[in-house]
Image 1: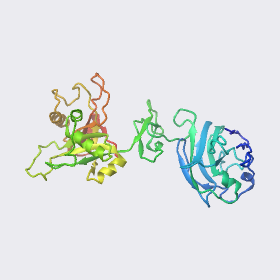
Image 2: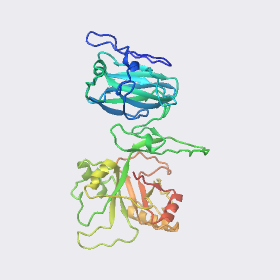
Image 3: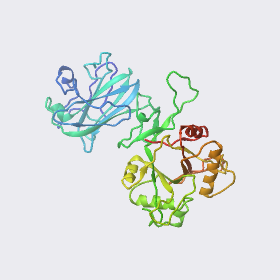
Image 4: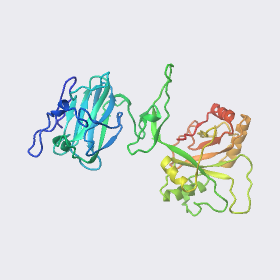
Length: 408
């Protein structure tokens, strides 16, 4: 790889001269030419953060495109390649940006080929000396040799990667799925899937905090419900094996998961919700059964369920949840039971003793088995869901250890 970085001076290094390709290791017009859509006056592309994938298109009117990025001192990697097909690219870096908003006339670094002739994409290792905003200008070899005409029509991808393993160690950054984060806008999936930050503990500006903790980027999720009618349901014809039937305390839930899996819809958690009042039933099969099936799944999957008649679960105040512990050590358990409905009656009594009458409540289980331990303080692997009737009850539930169900 023929790449060099410069601190405080111009360094322009590209591929060596080859019979089939011009030597552009000393580009001339980056300083002298001030025409629009040139290295000095590029067309504007999206601003980037560390680890954020930038995508764009070269065409007849946009041949030199800029992407600005905020960098702290230290080494970073910059990569530019074709998107969907090989592309002979070139990459400039200008900066840092001055107080008046302008950039130095001379490029800080330049690269034509990452590994000529095997890799015609561009790669730079830039050791940033001064923190600030830097401008990457991307283009193609063909645009360079045809300048001032733009001949390339192609898509590209550009990214800046930090060599420091600490999140944010090179400047404002984003993370993909399972990556570190401090806020929702730190999370960004390469494929554009919606993500949010979960588990972070942050400190408000101007306050002294004893403890902070990074979160992890996870997929945006939604809770959805479906009220099946008596004698029929979309999943009623699903056939279960003995192992599938034993996976949940309510075997019907296994049918729900299996039925929608065949439609390509992946459910993360599944359970039931019921009102605490006794259920009234009628003989007609068109009557509602009095319970709702509740599922948790990613928002793209939720959109597919919505098209099949499911309803987004939302309330005011929002739903809340608590993860029970093993060994019957939960505050509502007065006697040991393996019956879900009997345990829900205990939940009702416990909530009533704390001046809460839920609108509906139930348990949900993960569709992927969780590893549990023998300690009674370990989570059981299920989730107690409670819908509060008002803000006062909502506050009481929070004091009892309940937390929000995430709603995107």
